[in-house]
Length: 147
Image 1 (cartoon, helix red, strand yellow):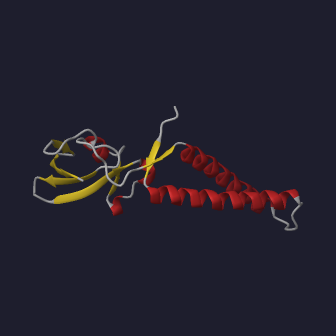
Image 2 (tube, one colour):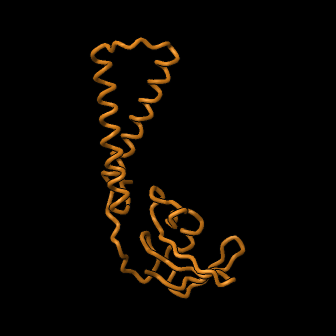
Image 3 (cartoon, helix red, strand yellow):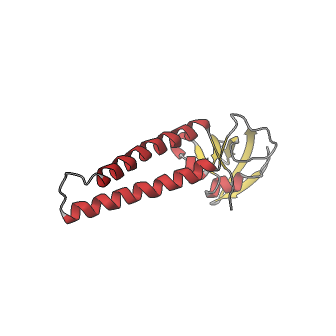
């Protein structure tokens, strides 16, 4: 399935920068190996170096796949239901209000109030409208605002 990955402009740029860096590192590694290299490695060092470059190649392929499917998230979502990209305000039963943004799992960072659409809270919020109530882990929440 070739589903679109919706990410913020900043996250897309971050992934493109990482892709560019990894391409350079892998190219330099391959170039050194093609030229025969002058550095002598122990068996363990050589094995660890190949594992590291293999991990970089895998990440490179993952980034290329993600970026081939990426769609930029609009700054504001125009929807009357919560979707990926929505900013929401939740109120719990104690009256504490939290502001969160629902994002693709790649971009999730709870310390920045960016909640994965696939985590329990994000999943519960998808499709909700202002004034909808829901329960999560025994707590009752009300969606009070969408931005």
